[in-house]
Image (cartoon, rainbow, N blue to C red; front, side, top):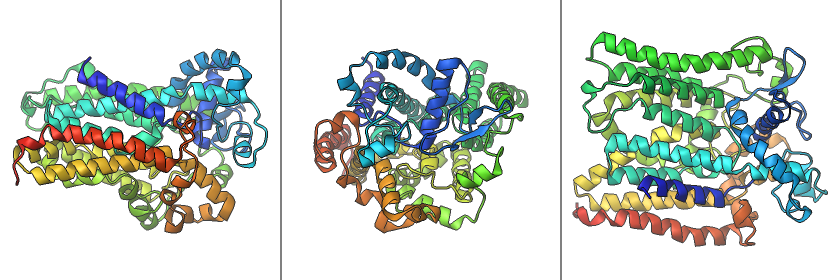
Length: 505
């Protein structure tokens, strides 16, 4: 078995062990119901949430309710739902009684917090049986990131170190235990960039990009938009990379490559536009603008001043990127190496990430609601980590043993934090804070900014959220320490093979 295959199955195992096994956010529940509708009657209409009627849906041209969220995850889930439904019908009552409770399905929250008798156990079981979808998407994102690192660094230690940090030391791990669309959007964007990059051993001026690869790269970026509409913000900067990377080459070659890339992108975006037009009458209408009163009621987001959002997205107690995913610090520290060796990529990705941060900060819904850390910045994390492999290889080449050891300790520490978050009940925490303090803490965003309410200080108090590990009866602290030994040992073994090669510099 190749190293890539071993990595894939290791990631699948880790993500499966920490998967919850159900939907815990209203967004995820809505998109899951679209998948169910596709299986049941072949249309993407959706029925209202029992506990939050009207959320995430808008009335279409034909009078039916349609989701305002990207359709890709619903269509991806449909085959899983088609298989899970008949299996759930055959599960014995004893098994049905033990499946995880999906928070917004039937009376999920009432059952979870108030002990009300669970309704529709079969429906919760279908979501449980479909949870491998999230694991596979997360593992594919890791494999795509590894491919990029090997293009940037070659088959080096740095590529392995960066991939390990991304897989086990970032928010991808806890998000792989949800049905949210960000991991799928991230995976599509990662592979879209991978197909644009040349091999590390090839000089940029000799690149002869294959038309099929360019068209597929554009199509994958389009699919990322179909998964989450905010990925449209990446399109100009991927185009900028193509433009900058082609500088000095014949104009005809650059135009031809751009045409193939735009063709793949345009084909998918045209299909998405037709999908929107069929539902709401306009290619650009996702459903959020159909009913202004509903948009205000459900706080879909409006443009506002950026300062609270900037602080919240970077340093906020519940959503700060540097608090919840400190691994990105290693990427920022090593950015100069990316800029020196891959300048076109460095400039275009830096511009894309800064623009995304500023755009999100100017939105009243910058926080992304119930989730671990900055949900809308999740797709930025792999691009922020692009320089980590180059940084690690540079430390090895220069014999910077102490700094290399520090990077290993830092990576293991990030993985420990991520493990703790993956085991904890972040969604349950937000629900409990709402019940304890009232809706006011959400209306003024205090729940995301007040350090007294920081989820990281509460997660150890809740039962372990993952379905498999939660059935052990062990609490979050014990599981974190026990599994943390394996995590730290893994990083120690990874760095041990190169530390002797470095000197004492």
